[in-house]
Length: 120
Image (cartoon, one colour):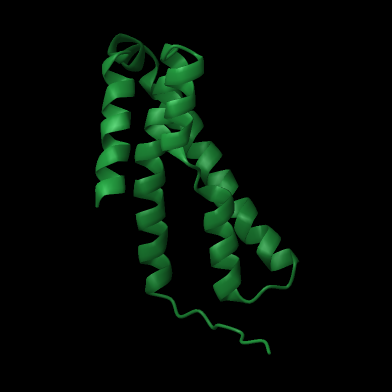
């Protein structure tokens, strides 16, 4: 819970300082982040499938490829780029969208049984 609250505080700080830019570019940012996330999650799953991994492992690879560390991204933007508006907005929205997309995908997958292949 603490890490989620810290991430949300980082996101609020990033968006608060750039709220006018956020309103100007929200449509473009929403679309870019959605497409990037969908492609990354799909690519991770596809690579797992192409590698012959079992379903359980494909899902894990999908999350590893698709979910990024938005808190780290925001920290880097704030530290090295003086909170540059567009960068902070994209990193902030990624943080929010990663939570939403991850929860949605986990919910869908939790309703479909995956087999875990045990290797010795």
